[in-house]
Length: 350
Image (cartoon, rainbow, N blue to C red; front, side, top):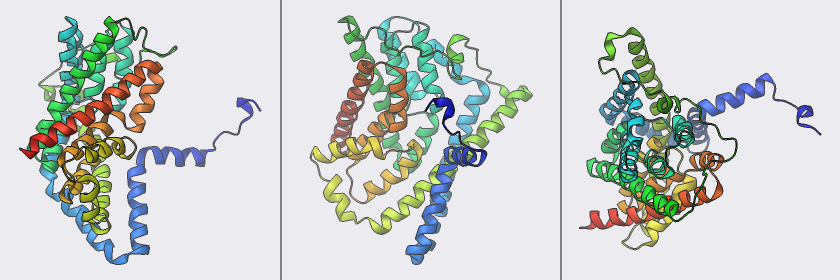
């Protein structure tokens, strides 16, 4: 059977697939509410109250993160990324890590941006620094992390994001100097995409964006898009949090992920890869687990490992680079997550 003879999805099937891709948090939210209503009706009220109360409690942080994302999109501040990749290798690695940890890039723009950087000749080391730091922190994530897990956790995760980038970029630089990792991109990988344009033709940001009607419209669009994105994912996260509080014994969390040994951090590092589904939604869940006895270092390891090597991110990386680069990316990610989780545990134990 040839590919052309295979049955193609009809309009109904295509619409369902499109709906699932765009609105799976709401669909999962609705399914969970339905299951609660059927299996444990007494839990429905407390779970809904938990979602509403939690959203209200973090509303100031939510509003701030939305405004930051909208401001970045309207001013074009993310175009400053191109300036990070000029200079000596060591400087580029540091600047790439800082750009990844501090710049407001959406996840959809990171992969084509990285392809563009490599295609125009930017060395792999600073690109890897940006690559590792970018999924872990951005201004909106910092605000929400501070609101959900506390300022100490937010500052530590920001430093870890930049540190992971510098470490990974330095390792890659040393490997390249030893003759490895030549021609990292897979054959046929282009340099296009929405993120690539920011590198090939960077434009200066317009800080006073309100003076241009088109940028004001962009600000509103970005604010609405960010609000809907955060609202649906956080609603699902808070619903899952209510179920964890209701059905997961705190003693089990303490026994598995508590204590002062290395095993809880190792478990959290490995579990973070398949279990991590969204950076914003993971925050309330980790906050709940820490409240039930999970050691903070394990929580940090989960967030770092999941943020860098979650399945969607790993699949995208696999499609972009050759196997040796992918293997090094995974090794740096997991090793760095475990090490930073351990360091954060030691810091919080002082």
